[in-house]
Image 1 (tube, each protein chain N blue to C red):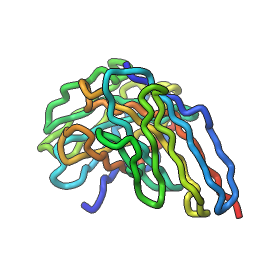
Image 2 (tube, rainbow over the protein chains, first blue to last red; image 1 turned 135 degrees about the vertical axis):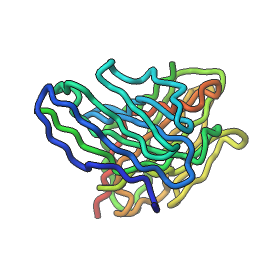
Image 3 (cartoon, rainbow over the protein chains, first blue to last red; image 1 turned 90 degrees about the vertical axis):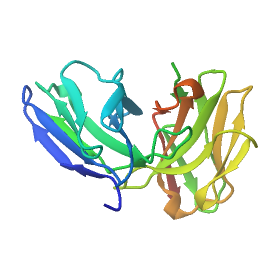
Length: 115
Length: 114
């Protein structure tokens, strides 16, 4: 596609439910990143993929969070047993490869609200 | 670990006035520095970046930033703003030894009024 696509754009869920957020990167981009943007906070790094592997998972807030990427393309961020503090905008970005100083291209985000 | 401070959460300014958005980062031996902009209802996009060389970096839409190593700053400037510059601006830094991890500031909302 022309840009990074994320779905759903908005998700409202009840505490304790599982949610899946999807990211479709720009075609040919081998690096993919997930960030979280909470109200009044900066963008919090969660995880990045180079191809299908995730060399750095250190940003995942807890073991309720997981992410996978298949076929070097689409990625899914899964949050199990959601909590109210998980409410945030989840941003996905991709880049041509993990080069030094490379530009990240961001999607418009998935806004998650946990009631 | 790197951190970024954007002290101003919001900067109101009149059209055609100059503006400076401040960014300071935690000290490191060597870093890459970026400014990203997020227009309403759009994803973030790169405004400019400093990798090496000249400390004055020019970006899109007339913006520029200056890398100051001694003050660990990377302030963003524009001599004359337009209404269309109204957006949220994020400063970001990555350590050259761990460049994949881009650390963002909390953002500064620039509000340009006529």
